[in-house]
Length: 243
Image (cartoon, rainbow, N blue to C red; front, side, top):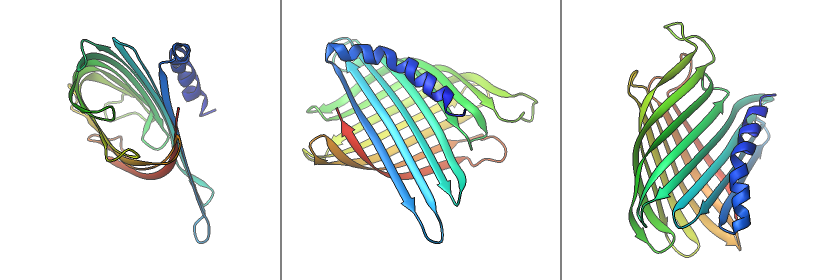
């Protein structure tokens, strides 16, 4: 079945973080958004995400697993699964070295799957309190994307070395509201295919650990597979539970 691969990867990736929960340093958040419309158009949208973080004096480990599904008039129009893991070795309170792996399966992207590994240097260049900060990172790695159809060169995959730039900005608007901006760009060093992603979100506490989150996501592929769009956008509204 189509969902087996992401479930296997998520279980394997979750194992070390689940073990870390025994130490009491594991934090996380579960997100779920469901939108159902009826009338002239019957549409169902489901978004789910699980984010985990385990931090010690010298290490910060994060994992994120997400899915997106949309069905309109009995036809599936979106189906996507993503997993990303990152381990940061902290030299001090601000500087760190990261190792990151990511995997994505988007049914309508023209790829059977997309994957990348990268490593590099990061710096928390600004921080105010516990909830406001700016992280910047730069590194290099490798990308392997399996195509659904052969490209113009007769290949069924794209693989090349990449340079990666990323930023993560959190700003506490108040004790109950948080603005978040995530940006990343992976630049191919051989075919110059650039994949850029952005997520802008605003979350507000409702009661206790439960929050409401509104988000806008953009993904741009400079050299997308034939028959697919270069830019994909998504607007979502979901409930967020922190633990």
